[in-house]
Image (tube, rainbow over all chains, first blue to last red; front, top):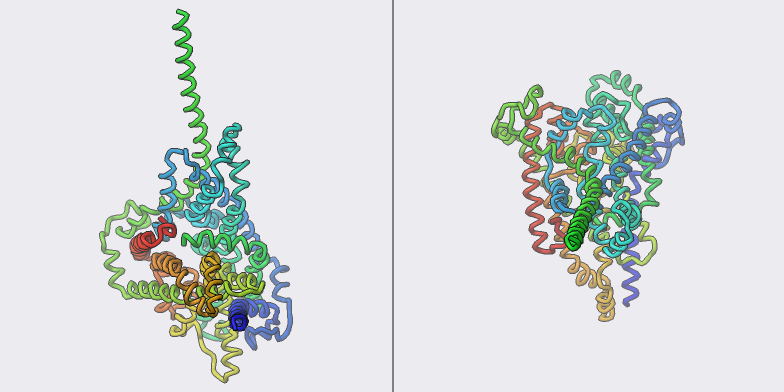
Length: 298
Length: 322
């Protein structure tokens, strides 16, 4: 009886999970299949799961015509690499510094980090600060600096890893052998902290790749600095703008001829998620580890 | 003479020794401070320098005079803000959506986590990976996915589903009655994989012998779940919910701004404090009103985070943020 109830549960559980997984994948399938469908078919019949007429035109258009798409892709890649390297470096160094018990003022420093998690000035003062004081509006720095480079939560997460994961005995042994602080950091602490460094790096990297707000807020003129997310966003807005403001059908038709067609829209979205989909299987376990680590602390 | 010289020599040595230690301590801490410097600088620029800027909400801002030079306005900006209907709408939307998200996501995550923990197939890591995937997509991409279904001209729902049912097309981005459900669905679609992992990790850490003993006593799978798993999960659930309640005054800007395509017809059901602040600042140019809403959020949010954490600390000090 017991095994039968178990078997029934297994069937039920698998069924539920299959439905949920399907539910997650369906929108992505719709996106991919539509991107491979001939544009005219899409205009007539709308997005669908089975390409009425297979076509790779959308991708050809994206990758051949010297348009802003490749440029935006380049910006996204550069931004993600620069942001992750820089952000991970300052996070790791800061976290390590906070983990060293003998340093005077350690408590104050930790509180300075912690307080940023409780209170913030909000969007308006931040915007004024970055535009008026630092003048980063319409520069690459506007994508890199605001908000994403380092956050208090990551620093404290990494700090507790350094405290708990690296035994004092090992560090003491290194000091007795005459290792300097820098030497101890690079030679011992850093290699031991590899898992957390990989996890935090992943979080920072995904944050940069997915960010659209910085570009949306700070890039008012330099559309050449648009990341792929900003470009996608701008495209969608153009479509909305035309849909809402066209008084006559003729106008709408003229406008729509100038913006990427129905299939290219979806192809661009595919290109935008592609790096995440490619990297995901390899980083998935690291990501899960990071969530459980941080999850305990909310 | 001879002794004195020796004593002086000893004293000298001791002094030198102390100096050495002090120098070594300084030498030891100096690199540590240097390591902290870049991160500290960033926090000052990104987090601390904007903080005094909240006084903007109490000023009659003029761009020429800057935040600090502008004349004081007292609470006038807040008076204006709360005299509008917007204040009520954005507060209601922010809180009600968050409450709905908390309830729906908690129930769904626990349900999925329990199923995953009980499954014996190796496919379960696959399931887990799949449902986590949407968490990694940007709000812009999610808005495209939603658009593929709901676009009035090309959307799947209008062209395939409603057409097959013989119904006419719906302008989804004008239909405000549907959006609370759509947003709750999209939020769960994106977030359940994440919270589910936290619950799953907790369930896995439970003592398996409890289940074995129950099984020997003839408890069915369902009884085991109801009588062992859920009671044991209680403290984690309370903690997660409290922490979420602490953030009830903040909303996912991307979800409320991107997914409804910033459509004006939907503002009454999609406008939250975050989208209101954004629109005030960059679309309407009403900086002081926007700043007032921002301060309202910062201060109430701060109080809520503190309160929630105090409660969490009372229940389980390890789970509290502080």
